[in-house]
Amino acid sequence: MVHGAYSFQGDLALPGDKSISQRALVLAPIARGHGRLENLNTGWDCQATQKSVEQMGLKFVNEDGGVEIADKSPQWNRGGVVEAGNSGTTARLFMGMAGFLASGASYIIQGDASLSRRPMERVARHLRPMGLEITYLGTPGCLPLRIEANEELQGIRQLITVPSAQVKSAVLLAALSAQGDTEIHTPLTRNHTELMLKAMGADIQWQGQWIRLAPGDLVFPRRWWIPGDFSAAAWWAAAAAVAGQITLRGVGVNYTRTGLLEILTAMGAKIRYSKITTSMGEPVADVEVRAGDLQGVEVDPSLIPRCIDELPVLAVVAAFARGRTVVRGAAELRVKESNRLEEIATLLSAFGVGVELRHDGFVVTGQHRLHGAEYEGRDHRMVMAGLVMAALTPGTSMIGDVRCVGVSYPKFLRDLRQLTGCLLDE
Image 1 (tube, rainbow, N blue to C red):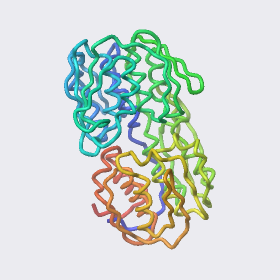
Image 2 (image 1 turned 60 degrees about the vertical axis):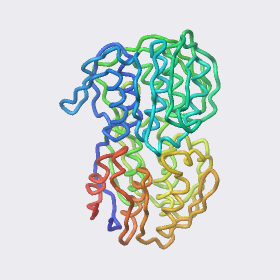
Image 3 (image 1 turned 90 degrees about the horizontal axis):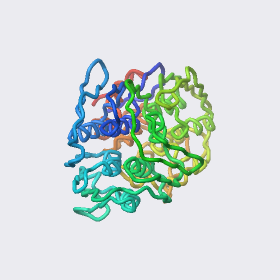
């Protein structure tokens, strides 16, 4: 239960970036050397990735706020079972890592009921031409699946049409163990994998939409500080754009992730970067966001890959802006943990917002007479969007199963209280 409405004020340090954390964990078993991961994301998805890596023979020690790689064993090459839970990133990255299996070895990747409905063939069809054998053990195209490497993988030249960083990353991981270079042409997506491979010594080059990677050894850094998760910062940036002023400390501001800030600026929010630095090739900054006189915008579809996870909270901002906000080119939201396009329409309608659902997006007409509402969501990002909406809206609201925020942001409720003084009954 949330009692609104509030202004968002204060300074906040963010949990480690979920995408970078998961990739760092997956690369740890194959890179030479031992190192320490600091500010590692502790959400459920990252826990699933860490447990899966541990099942493959890597040992971690949690100490002094960091995670130390303590030991490596050849168990990785013998295969096993990857329990991906609800984490699509875990499942898809491990599909690419199968290139490091010994000949004749295999492993099974499985997930919970929700993940078992999400598409995996989009990855498999790019890995099979490289030499991996992938067999579905249930519904075709979905988990569970078995993956084997019975021959040496071959680097190839191929076109990836799905705008998915997970698909691209799986191919690049497989390419590390292939014979010969791999070249891929891919739409603009998050480039965390390319940046960290470069920082770890990989022979990788990219220009425009082309990426070339030669096989070779990686060297794990002695200390790897994970930047604050922009997808976590987005909730507070969006809320402050409506009502408040917040400084977000040590946030990853990778260009492929910050489309939301460009949209908020176009809507009238005041945004400033300071203390700009880098960590393993990733740009990091403090980001200050102040409320402005918001007005609706038509979002350029080319921005969508750079803000796909932030579209639920953008819809919340649009509810408080004058005029219409139009989002197109976001059909990918239909195959996330839930059909997020449908969930956005359900959430906003409950609060009295004018929303029109389209096959690849939505239109929000803002500044209706808003009121408290009930929203029964189970998708972690949709529940967080509902909590932000409730905190900004007068009245009392009931928002779904708030425990699910632990998937990506375990301390979300604590930070919500810190920034608003919000009265929240769990």
